[in-house]
Length: 461
Image 1: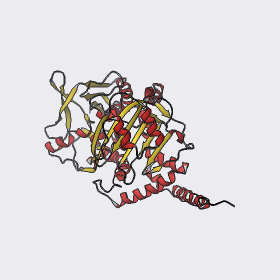
Image 2: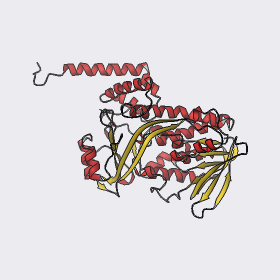
Image 3: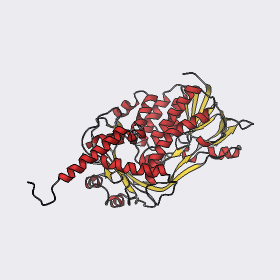
Image 4: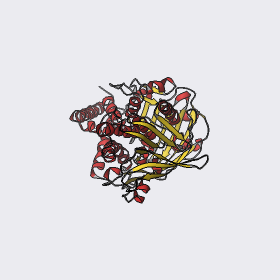
């Protein structure tokens, strides 16, 4: 790779920050990651990632990108204990979206993107270890970001002011590129306003999601390795039950629009009693709790539209939740962060630093838009959710419900939907004539089969 600068600085050692640092190590002589926490020496929760105590999903495309940035990463993850779903066996998962249960038996035709199930701390720890092994990357932990430093003409961000959390001493770090990976609390909008730029317009979908999680052990294999029950019409609630490393399971229940699950296990089980499959509820009831129930609230999905700004200073880009944070029930965050890192890499490869912020924000917006349409579109199916409903969103929701209905009994359709949901295939695949034909013929076969079924109590000649 061509070196484009001496020093890049990443603000935040979140998943998005760690992946961005790995990309920058290919283009800058040195990379510094500034992190307020002192990360634990092991796969443990840390204060700066409260959502890490809840269920997480590394979708198929996200895993592919991380494995590309750190070759052999996924194999290492599996060797250390992550649960791997690599044979395409639909009997190992139980997934319900919009009230439709995906096919529960059969095998996918393609198994080129296995899923890896693990806790967020486990995954983040392995990424952090691999990044620490990159020779030109340094993680400066235990430091707060005080402010961004602009050049006198405010046309460029030239560095950052940081302060040690141990001694409150401040120092300036200068860099050719600053990457803001500080999550929803990003200071870039305020910095832009103070430097004479416009703040980005923000798109919001107000979901008011609250989720409660209990780590546990389940005594025997009485349940699928991954259970996802999404919201359904008239029921803005759902649950997850996912197997983890070290024979652990994460049981999570969630509600939108003020439907808040209780903060203790018995209450969580009662909260899910009217929509959880009986065997899933039985498995959770039989589990042995590990630690306390934890809760987390997410007021809205939020997209800061940096891609629409007419002016933006050089030397600064933003990634991960600092650009867009989604309703967490869709498990898209880490995968979109990985796609942001890939967009940054492609922009640095193709044009270096020339007009980098504009090119990067527009490229990142393409993958963000796909995730936003899937997540926000599903949320906006509930009339109580606040947000803009375009005609395209309404049409997409109707089509999605049609597809999901067929997913319940056609394994080919279910696989194609699953691949789109994992960002392995474009949503445009669901509009391909061959796929539409498959949907229509599957529905026709189903209707004919139902018509041939004898009426209850009627004898068949």
